[in-house]
Image (cartoon, rainbow, N blue to C red; front, top):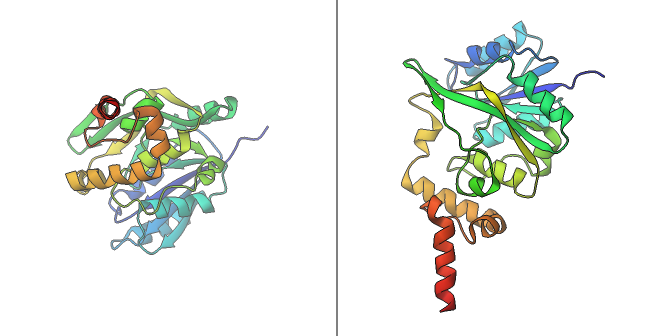
Length: 259
């Protein structure tokens, strides 16, 4: 039986400094066949030129160019144009271990109940690296916080079934909302027992730009509006600003209303 094609979807916005390293690193994967789609999201630097040169050098690489629309629009563009049945979203400055793809595909293709496969991870920059301590997956925990980074393996059909990444979510953590709608009604999640993902920390990292209190409030309001049923089931009510206290607070508020 031939191996399934994996499509690595690489959204890129002004990441010319790291794009070649990310692409060449992904192409060192022990798994084949693969294709790698670079989606240039209206970059103002030389990202598009570097992407096109990479496509000339490596037959597995394709380039899509779009006006700046944000990372969700870029990922969805890549997913819709992907030829593979399995998708790996990978940002244009991050890295993966050579065996990550091979081991993830083994799980997806042998366990039909599994929707998402990810791994252990580290955060790194020029000064060094540190372990990224991710909470164990559960739907209850997913209601309070995200523990799956975007560079996880999924089936293309599952991504399309939930409408891809929400393009109107502009306040960050769009991968969290994606996992909620992907997993809230079922599906197993597997974390591989090794470090396979390397998240690059930069001064312009989106996580820093979207970490303000106002962005957090906007994000929680958005999630509550879109997934009220999920939070009611897992937290006995809406997600709160103090997320870890959401369930006991909701329970208390319901008790008080009965008095």
